[in-house]
Image (cartoon, rainbow, N blue to C red):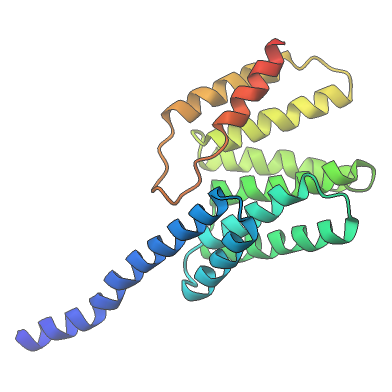
Length: 207
């Protein structure tokens, strides 16, 4: 019996140690990011992703950082490098976590980066896929506020482009705020962003 307990401790101890190390690394990366050191945070997430090959969160945040950087990027070569890297890490994360609403939302964000950069080139290619990704994300998790907001914003942008009424989508944005108010992430490390954006969009609707 004592021998079996020793074997159990031998196998369990690395798992107990690994999780705190993962959490500490992630927290350090978040602090760097919050201190406007996005590149350093990205490097930290990359190291964590290599050390924790079963965890999808580091890949997710690498993709998010590169997506965020791309909103204001004007250089096509730099943008392509950033979005290709984001796509690589989304693909890796999806292999680790199937039917993940958060990853579908991030994929939609990256496709939207391409459309925002060059609508003439990428609009036809990605518009349908973006709408489908938000629908799939909400089918998986109807309470996900980022999926609800993304779907509403994408539909609102399309309505504006074609000169249609955006009021119905303003209501959807308001509904997403309610989801943000009740949403509880799986842990402090899981995605929990978007409420400020939802509030800002809702405010513009009323302006």
